[in-house]
Length: 341
Image 1 (tube, rainbow, N blue to C red):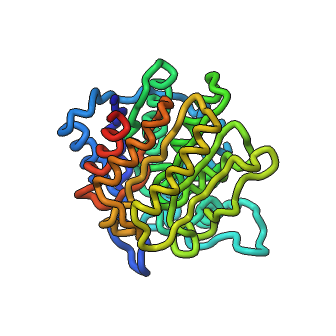
Image 2: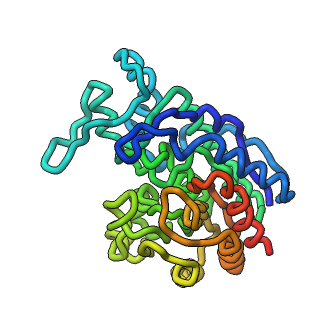
């Protein structure tokens, strides 16, 4: 399987994350991608290619133009204030407040942020742009006839909504790739999100559409980030009714239960009969992941890949989460090798 990878991911190298009331080293760090590409090479998964460069048009097909402009200039505006730290949201338009975009950058941050854990630092925007190029190059690979492509995106994307960032995500790589495939002739696309955390951003983007089926396996929102989306009764709206399927699961979930959810999601995907499948490939359902509570083993990820591969649908794997840095590489490669088995 071909892997698309860019060294420009290193430009996203934030030093702070708000976690447990402290500013700590971010769990989403450059070494994650380092370990994944190392495993891809060690296991001879296939060719590794740099991405092509795409315009912002595919981004603007799923993201609000004002939000994209905010991401482009936020770091410059933040620096102009004289603040010494990284840009972190500290205030939001909470219930019964006005949804108007403030002029001052502190207010803008809160308007466009869904959470406070994700700081913005120098290099965040160019890294996010390169990450969407990695995803789009993988999508182009499917259009060119590839059966499976791995886009090693960093920063990840599935928490980024049409007009919000957070959860380490700025541009929604999987959604951008799915819309690109639609724009180039595919009538139906399915997105399968197996990251431990709910793909709230992807759901937000496609919730009222019947041409993109979204299925997400994740920690129950009562107990897991992003907390306020991902319930099983969220099934789509208007034309999209029935095309959004959530599989929230409780703390301690093992592969026995997780696998049943995956089986059901794959059955729905097969009935939907998409031309292409986009997989938001998070491996933070791993038993040793520091910020999840599922109990999948490394071998379970190989089984998951086999199950996905059994559909026989051309598939783009887009890298999302996975924060046990020592094991993230083998877990990702296990999914991909299982897919090709």
